[in-house]
Amino acid sequence: MILTPKELNDQKSEFTVIDIRPGEQRNEFPVDGLETVVVTEKDINTISGKKVLICQFGIVTERVILNNNLEDAYSLLGGVQAWMEFQSDQSDLSRWSRQTVLPEIGIEGQKKLMNATVAIVGMGGLGCPAAQSLMSAGVGKLKLIDGDIVELSNLHRQPLFGVDDINRLKVEVAKDRLEQLNKNAVIESTVEYFNKENGMNIIEGADVTIDATDNIQTRQLIDRFSKEANVPMVYGGLFRYEGQVAVLNVNGSPGYSDLFPDPPSGGETCEDAGVLGMLPGIIGNIQALETIKLIVGIEQNLIGKLLIYDGLNHQSEIIQL
Amino acid sequence: MININVKCFSQVKYALGKDELNLELEVGATTLDLEKIIREKANGKLDSVSLRIALNQKYIPHETELKDRDEVAFIPPVQGG
Image 1 (cartoon, rainbow over the protein chains, first blue to last red):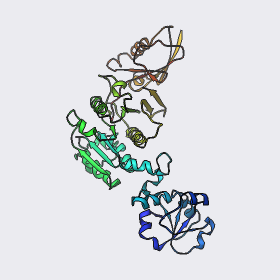
Image 2: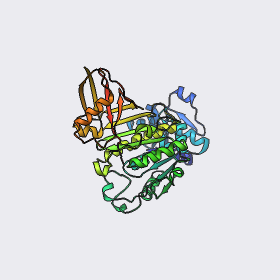
Image 3: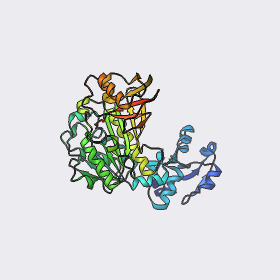
Image 4: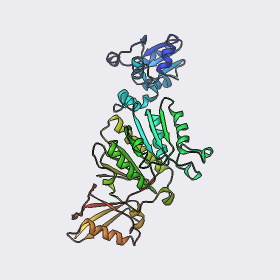
């Protein structure tokens, strides 16, 4: 069983709080605002009544409870790391404890995500999985733009939509679904196609723009506004079993116009060429991953590189731009 | 003669029916010579397709002379979503 920092704070008096961390870790990261007892794993059962086990990240305690078949025992979600954050500004980050435990993310990275704005152009096969993953990861604000409605043929690759949504506006359905994933996030939806008139308004002020469109002309326009506003663009494209991702326009790094100088021709849309739903799912998620790296500042990334992923033989190629 | 390994992506792969080709070219052959050969092999299927070229995993914007054992990738634009 799991308890969040807020739940523990509200019901502190009902629990014995057991710190199972090694002494070294207890000294380095002391716990404020909780009275704790220190007990070794084998002696936990000697403490009667309701108890909360705490460790640094809330992972060891879950295993200890399962392995020892402990009754009336809860694991503090996110551990001491999440508890101390809750103590300092009452923000409960424990739901993201599985990613804040990563040293590259941590509490600081999570806060960057929660303060970030991501614009997603297109709410189709790439936009749906990208938006879903970013919202689950705790990104604070999404700006969605798409003028299209949900059609039956979209459903196999656009997981935010169901049969009851057919003929509804994509961005409105997406907003409803995404809000369920994180009630604190802000979702701004624009029921228009991305164009010369509205483009700057969508991209300006965002930390990252995800290109999740289905055509090259719109992509070139995103590239232009992305350069003008100095907002990085995470490009994604598909052809049958193959996908491409590149992180473009990061402080003057190569853009889409360097990748494919205009006017490129010959690409086919998913409608023309055919696609299995998993491919945009994979590529949209790689775009979301690169977006997270940009926001948090993780250095291994696709800035100035083109990734080509082949879903048939699972080979990938990275080309330096 | 020089040996060149050609990697084919998206429409190029479907036009040629192969992921990879090994070709023998005359010494002094360039990336554009190779592109002509690839387009001829595609029997018109790539006539309206723009192709970008990467030489040894790096984009090259200009015609470049090839060396023995170079790897050349032909990358068409793709749409998406």
